[in-house]
Image 1 (spheres, rainbow, N blue to C red):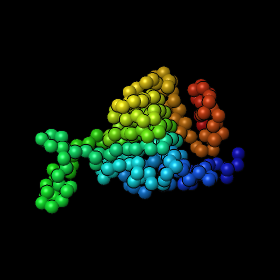
Image 2: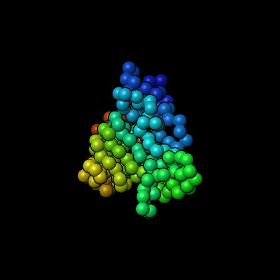
Image 3: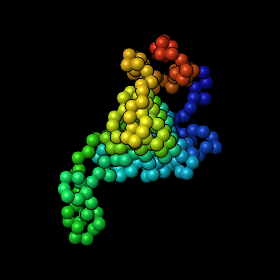
Image 4: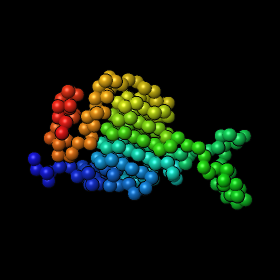
Amino acid sequence: MNLSELPDPGVLHPMPGQARVVLLKPLVRSALIEVGEFSYYDDPDDATAFETRNVLYHYGPEKLVIGKFCALGEGVRFIMNGANHRMDGPSAFPFPIMGGSWAQHFDLITGLPGRGDTVVGHDVWLGYQSLVMPGVRIGHGAIVASGSVVVDDVPDYGIVGGNPAKLIRRRHTDADVDRLLAIAWWDWPLAHLTEHLPTIMSGTIDDLENARP
């Protein structure tokens, strides 16, 4: 195998002539976003604006964590905890952000409770214009249907869809999901992964176990 021909996870645009596709790991600059190798975003308008157009109300301290080999379709968005409003009083309106004398009450809208980091596992496919709400955890190998609003955690290798997104089915049995998580092909060395690409894409779980380095 010619190692010089292996895909480069540090290239911004992995598809020559296709500016609409970007690898997220070399793109993101925010310390609040972590992305694994080869996870990509596809958008014909401006894929490079992912941090500002697709990750919204991200003021911290909660992080957005995206694993390796994830496919994010056009218009996928993450709503972060900064979008929260107080709901324990008569009004949910954030008066202090309007400024003036109202600003002295800014403490009333800071430090609102959140659900923690938003985490997307490895090998996840997020369909066109799906929306992920704060603190959601999406398991490895999961698929989110186009237009879905994900408000609850998604199990490993689950397929969800709708608003709010509901579990449609699991891609594999519980036993096979355990086997796939143990194999963790996304952590294989790149050269070994490349050698066994047909198995990863279309083989059986038995084949995948036999191919482990």
